[in-house]
Length: 246
Image 1: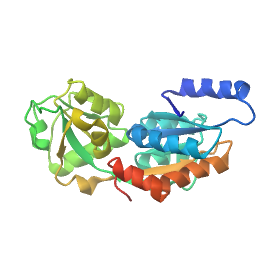
Image 2: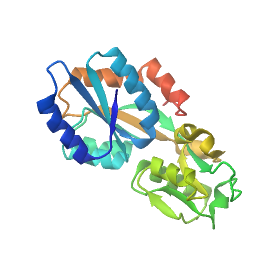
Image 3: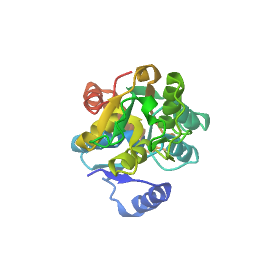
């Protein structure tokens, strides 16, 4: 079964274990991916393992910017998937990826608790309420700033979260009246949230990129993962999960 790793120290520890504990026939594919890809990539990871006997897919999900910086610093991994081009450029500038491929887009929406206690219906309603969004330096934060600016809304969030799943968690836990997240995260939350489309948000789409990491020790297996993500099967899974196609 594929496994999810959350931090660089865990990735480093995993590498040390792989060097000493795995048989020659075992292979591990390590994927560093934006937190908004958690559900769909986990599903694709199960399929990849089923199609590749003896291969374990291990994930590190988190902020695209943080993961790109870790990859740039030489963190072990085979694949990097980011929620925008700006984050991928960090890895490109460090020379650890080349020729990233776009594979999906996403649109920002408002989510509230199911009963929408604050009665929020649009961005203007966020003013004066307890709402959250991603930090400015991560993809979902960059998109949120662009959407708010385009709408001419100056609303102060109660907190700035490290990634989109942390933002979603603040809403599903009842700590916030609303949050700005991707449509795919709203789909993943299901009945735990009410979804409110944002007028004009489709003009501020974020585009996802995937690339092989230079530190990968199995370029063929890495390319097979990228091929799955960009294949009709992978694209169908992304669409079902709430993403749109580039």
